[in-house]
Amino acid sequence: MNNYIYGLDFGTSNSALSILDIRTKEVVHTFIEASVLYFPQPLTSRDPVIHFVGKEAVKKYVASAQEGRLMKSLKSVLPRTSFTHTYIYRQKYTAEELVALIISHLKKLADDWTGEEVTTVVLGRPVVFDEKRANDQLAQDRIRKAAQIAGFRDYFFQLEPIAAAFTYERHLQKAEKVLVADLGGGTSDFTVMQLDPNRAHSPHRKQDMLAKGGIHIGGDDFDSEIMWKHLVAYFGYGLQYKSYDKMLDLPLHYFRNICSWEEMNFFKNKKIKSDLEYYYFATGNNEAIARLMTLVGDNWGYALFRAIEQGKIDLSDQDVAEICFQAGNIDIQEEITIAAFSNTIQKDTQKIGNYLDQFLADTGLTYTDIDTVFMTGGSSLVRPIRKMIEERFGADAMQSGDNFNSVANGLAYCSVLFGEVS
Ligand SMILES: Nc1ncnc2c1ncn2[C@@H]1O[C@H](COP(=O)(O)OP(=O)(O)OP(=O)(O)O)[C@@H](O)[C@H]1O
Ligand SMILES: [Mg+2]
Image: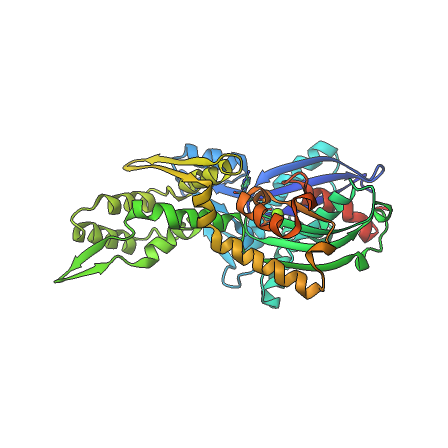
């Protein structure tokens, strides 16, 4: 019998594991890691395939000059039936085996901390993995299987924003109707809950969960928009090339693909290399095409997106940020103001806003029915998004907690709902 239960938030960008002490019903520690895997290229075909997780993965990848395989945002591929497995060098990994590498890593850190092999975990899941029911179920099954592979025997699922609500409830003195906005890397999730500190330990909370919903837009999309609106011209967007006696646009899909570093990862085949060489020639050796060749050919996608993300993060508390990126013949120094950034992500902001309006209307609630908006997740720090929410509910209603471990803590607290802690 364990003295601890874990709450595990497997996120698109970051994963967190919180340790609940069953005796005190308190979270005693949280581990957070970037949801990133790195497989260095084996020196010979006889060498085993090894991997690194989180910060260590990023460090090793950068130190290797982008050799080997880096995987990120795995959560967003979990609902895809087309993604069953991948070969990493000669070793086959299923989707759940890849996720299990991240979960095992966190479990090991936590087990070392507690000195126990903890077997019970409350797993988070977004409100919507996928609009298609079968794909949604597939994603949840894959996380469950990953938890099994990592050594958990008993597992329960809870929605991520509901978990965040339970964390917020710990700080309440009185009952409140709360909208939880969990704005992450891949999704923006909402729930409305009736919270009451006096009911925090009750296992009968179903009727307190008034509404739930979510939309597939998150911080990763804002990064892609920055690339699309501010940086694609560095790589040849807008150029034309000469084909016989006509001037034609370069294929649009190149520029769409480089707006997501994952797509860019699959963009490095021989055909594309020779096509780019052709366009370089047909544009009269245009420097921008040479940059595109470096970006794709030398795997700079991840590093460039880190620079973009950093610019976005700087704009959470600065009015002007600079996206700086140097690699080979690429030298980007792009200033971006908060006003320009608001414009850049305006469509996404509007989509989230429209979704939120419809979501509330469907529950039969109005803005004034909501006492508090509890903002969590990294993207809750994005100012245009905060502003959009604040305009609806008023500045006084806005509350936020710890943006990166509210969900994992809440998942651990939730174990009471499953009768694991009484
Ligand atoms: N200070 C900040 N300002 C703006 N955005 C930020 C900040 N810090 C982190 N982010 C963004 O928040 C996102 C990650 O947030 P979080 O860790 O909550 O997501 P996640 O839980 O991994 O994703 P999901 O819940 O969608 O699966 C990333 O897009 C990151 O760029
Ligand atoms: Mg999250």
